[in-house]
Figure (cartoon, rainbow, N blue to C red):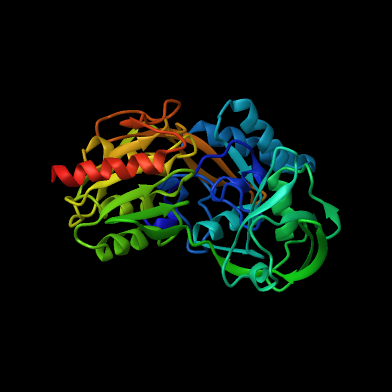
Length: 389
């Protein structure tokens, strides 16, 4: 299993709207799709396999083939078939969308380097500017209001639509193409033109708190994120406790979640899962740090691969889990190429934690509840774990 073949990402809305789910409010990045291993293995050309097990795929593929023969849209026919199937996480993607999702999982995207959210009044506010990005070079700051993209107002629009405008999805705009932004800061309003660029997502950040505490924040499991976590653990001072912040982590590459688990476990079971009734297992690599105090911080935005990791650390007694109940996405999807080149993903099974707990629809209940003061509560717990050791 390669990292590119194994990923688990929830989607509540089909096609372009899925763009918000790995980078929940990132205005310039696409999101991952969501699937698990074997049937999603790539061919030598890098495309998803053209076949997958089970009549579920046959039904969707047949609908797409009939539409193609009739001269209508195969992708729309496939979407209708997936919708009728009742598969909560099923989805159909165009070739371009699927390529964007794969690039996002590789930790790269084309954009200008803005993170943002939609406020209650419908305004789009910048929440972060990527260092070294076109947006940073232009002087855009956190707190600025994004008013328009290429002359189109973004007020009241879903973040997913703003994503599409900034990326230039309608024209498949590559790096180097221009995009004009309308911005506002206080009483000042201005416009500027940026060139899109290939950027890295930097899904893992590491910082030290006052006292012997290191916080490792994982926004999503993109390619290489597990190794970044393992390096951060090795470099942390010997007496330093760790807070693994998984709040808002909507999933990503499951192999990277397993690699992250390997930073804290000495081998052993991370999760089991089934694919059309066939049972399989995921194991950590030996040699992880099993003694350092560890707290996993979660919330209702912790999903999928992040829940898989949390469940493993909790079941095996390696971490105290602090926060609120997680989202509850424990299903397994596999991708399959349709006759027109689009990609369908349907649910084929579910994963379980080492103790056999199912996650789908229930989530993971933390050991200690905490809401707004979750980080402070985690620090207190670490203090107690340090005393106990």
